[in-house]
Amino acid sequence: MKFKKLYIELSDICGLKCDFCPSKKALRGVMSVENFSKLARQIWDKSEIFTFHL
Image (cartoon, rainbow, N blue to C red; front, side, top):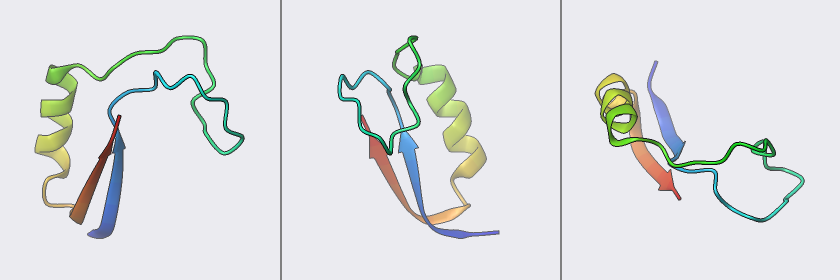
């Protein structure tokens, strides 16, 4: 299956408390380079557009 657009969240360190955001856990952090590389290899052909959010 190919998606039109995939949104990838590279971190969840935002201090805002938006109602629509699923990232309300206490543990915060940034995706490691190793995890990003693994993810990129798995999804590179699954979408036309990739959007990366910090």
